Image: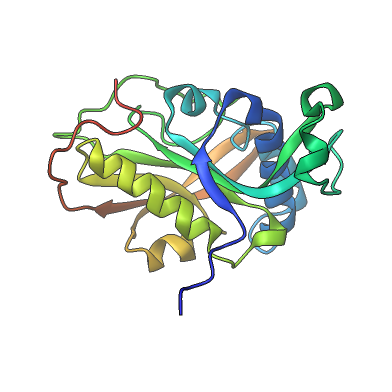
Length: 222
């Protein structure tokens, strides 16, 4: 018997997905990070490190898990049929329903969105540097249904195809268990400044990958 396909599909994120990605990140942080971070830390982080990194989207190295046949109208939470969406979704201000988002980068920035002060958009060298796993978030409605793991595997596959054999990330305390199960090792715990005298505990994690045959032509290459 063939396995049942998941109700969501992965694709490369597009510029028009940015509002939906921002809403997803907020829902994920507020809904899934409560045991690890205080309300003050969560809200402050949503103004700094947990903002959308549009550079990842422009580079084509960020993915979204969409729910086919569903959209959100006017920022609401009620799905609408895909047939109705075809009759002017843009005019109605509709966005796709996202189960998750996440990706990788061949730039030096380790974590943080557009509003994060610590950024370095310089290119990494696959021969000597580690690609970055970036900004994986899952909507609470789709938690523990394989979305995060699928996004991580897609990011790893793309980075491997681009010639990288090392990966690293700045993981939240919430996401660290998933990454450990996927073979990432803790390197160091750091405190990321998020303003207002607050910091956000983040775990630096790393993993080594086997080299891919014919590497260097993946999505996201220069």
